[in-house]
Image 1 (spheres, rainbow, N blue to C red):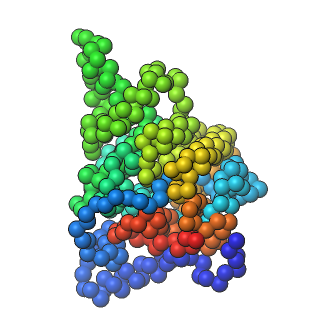
Image 2 (cartoon, rainbow, N blue to C red; image 1 turned 180 degrees about the horizontal axis):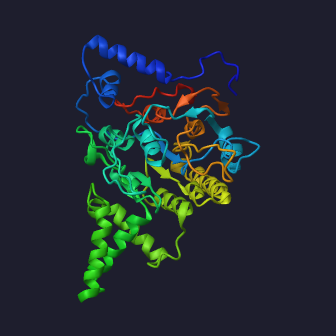
Image 3 (cartoon, rainbow, N blue to C red; image 1 turned 90 degrees about the horizontal axis):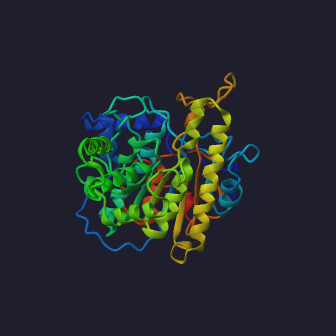
Length: 411
């Protein structure tokens, strides 16, 4: 275990004040005016060279977003945890960062979509909501995601770079690529979700000639409404043959009613296991989110959801441990999208995250070959360091990330 009295400064990442001071000094010296969104590209990246994709031989990576907003108390506090497998069995196999944080820049929101993009891009940003609809915010990354870096550098098909997404957050379907002019849709990942299956199923039913007349018109309108949600790549039209085959197999097994397959975060676990068996992903992100049901004001919705994620992690890790190709060649990265509030005056003290200090307090866990085992780095590190660290693990340059690599991860 790491020395908890390590004299190293409390954070491997500069404080907000120091970071801003250094950026202002750089701007003054250069005599230019750059926006925050372009500054990281100017200071942290070398000129991009032409990339010729090559075969990939590095480790598989499974990023698990311990999502829906969770506090450290109910996750990594040994006395109060609701995820005993992750904390007590899995964490000793790897390196735990109990003081990972989301920085407190002005206008940086601690929520699900933003946290997911922090993890995928390695950069904080103030995202503009292109939808302006309640609970349907739409964000577009300005710099590449990990999926784009990987697919631009290596010959890996879309179907082996996957986002596993929840049915209640359709707006997060579209984080599969950025709007960066050197990356973008040509290097996108695929998405598995109930929304994608419903769209696939309705299209297949229409094409089979199941309906006629007014009923057909109604079903076609429903399909158009589903596809319109995918405002960036027009629904499933761009999904690969491998994914369409995946959905057909899913349909054969679970049927068309939606009453047989798991729901909520249990569905994400099942989709992840099916994906591992049938699609063999090299990079996969599982966006758990059920703790967010605490919005209904019932404490058990939150604590039970943490336990369900813990059970899902155990199932996925156990499957990987038993698969010959994945067992010694897969790294798990477990990190929340955001924290939650700590308000002792509320009946549910973590009802929502209003950007209070505990909403910025998360954790990170790395487990797998090449990762230090039984280690704990008990000093502050930053959420946006995840992308650069995954990049180093997979042998890719992440030119536009702003967080430093977590060197303590590597054995």
